[in-house]
Image (cartoon, rainbow over all chains, first blue to last red; front, side, top):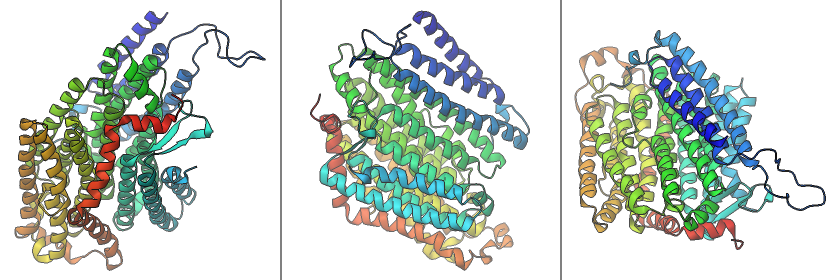
Length: 115
Length: 503
C-alpha cells in the first residue's frame, strides 16, 4: 500500500510541475493545486500508514495497547488543506483579474515587469 | 508566564480584527494603525529586555509540556527581529497615513498590514516547525492581498510571479516538514535538533536539509531563486513596497539562520559550503542586476537581493564572528532598506515618476530630502560612520579570518558596486538638472499638502536617526549581536531552555 502511494505522490508532483511549466495561467493554477495535494499526501505516506488501529485508549488503561495510527499527520494535513484552500481561492481570483486587466492568459505576454 | 512573549503576536492580530470591525470608518482604522504599531513596538522592546535578562523565554501552549505542545520561544535573535518588525511597522503605519490612496484604505489596507505584522512576529517567535509553516502562510496571504491592492496591470503581472514562486516554496517546505516528521517523529524544533544529533544515518537528514534550504532560499530571494522579487516589489504602492522590502525576505533569512544553526549542523562541510557559494552568487548577481536598471524602486529591489547575500554569507562562514556580522547586518539592512523605499515614495510624490530619466534637480529644490536620501544610501554602500560600515566590516573580517578569500573579495567588490548604484541614483535624481519635460508638468509646485507633510517625513527622519545611532553608537548593538550569535553557536542552550530537565 505504501509503495503504491509513493508512486501516486511521485506522479502528482511530476504532473504538478509539468502543468506549472505550461504557458497558460489556468494550467499554472491547476499545477499549484496538484502540488499542494501532492505535499499533503506525502506527509500522510511518510508518517506511516497503519490500518485498523485508531488511536484510542481503552477504558481503565493509561496508554494505548499495541501499535496505533499516528493522529498527528492527519491534524497537519487538515491544517495544510485549509491553508491551501484559502491560498488557492486567492490564486483563482488573481488569474481571473489578471486575465481581465492584461487581456491574455499567456505567461509569455506578461513580461512587462521583468525588463 | 511571560505575557511579553505572546503580545507581539496578539497585538497586531487584535488591532487587525478591530480594524475589520471598523471597516467603514477609515478614520478609526488610521488611529488603530498607529496605536497598534506603537503598542507592538513597546511590547517588542519589553520582550527584548526580558530576553536579554533571562536568555530564553519559553511559552507552552495550553500548558502541555514540550515537546507535546506548540511552543513559542524567544531567544535574542528572535527578540531583535521582533523589535525590528515593530520599528518598521510603526514607520510604515505613519507613512501610510499620507501615502495610501483612499481607495486602498477603504478595501482593507490597514487590517492586512496588521495581519502581515502578526505573521512576521509569529514566524520569529515560534519554536515549532509546522507552526512556522502556518505563520509563513498567514504572512503570505496578507502579502498577496497587499501586493494586488489597486489591481493595476503591473501589479497583476508581478503578483502572478510572486504568488506562484511563494506557493511553490511553501509546498517544498511542507513536504520537507512531512519527511522530517516521518524520519524523526517530532515537530518541536528543539526536540528535532536533539534527535537529529543522535540519528545513525544522517543521509536522509542532509536531503531534508537541502529541501529546507531551497524553500527558505526562495523566500529569502537568494541566487538562483530570486527572480520573483525584482519582478514584483516595485509594483504596489510605495508603503507596501517598503514594508515588504524591510521584513519579508528577512523572515526567510531568519528561518535559514534558525534551522541551519539549530537543526542541520550535522554536515556543516556540505550544507554551509553550498550556502557560501549561494551567498557569493547572490551578492554578485543582485548588484549587477541593479547596475542595469534605471527605475528607482527596481534598483533598490535588486539591492535587496545583493544584501541578502551578505546575511547568508554570515551564516555560511559559521564562525562566531561571522554570525555576529550576519545578525548585525540584518539589523542594519532592515532599517536602511525600508528608509530608501520611503524616500523613493517622497520623490515620486514630488515629481510623479520612478524612472530616473524623468527625475532630477531635487538637490536644488529640496536639499534636506537629498540629505535624507544620502544617509541610508551611503549606509547601504558601507561608508563610515554609518551603520552599514560596521555591519560590512564584521562580515568581511570574519571572511578573512575564515580564509574564504574569494567570497570575501566578492563581498568587497559588491560594496563598491553598491556605491556605484547609489551614486547613479544620487546623480540622476538629485544632482542633474531637472529634465525639461518634467518642468513642464510642474508637479513640484503642487507640493505635498502641508497637513500630510509630517507623515511623509517623520518615518524617514526616524529611520535615518536609527541608522546614525547604530553607526555612531555601535557598541551596544554589537554586544546584542554578539549575545545572539553566542546563543546560535550553542544550540544546546536552546534545547535545554525548551525541553527543560526532562530529556
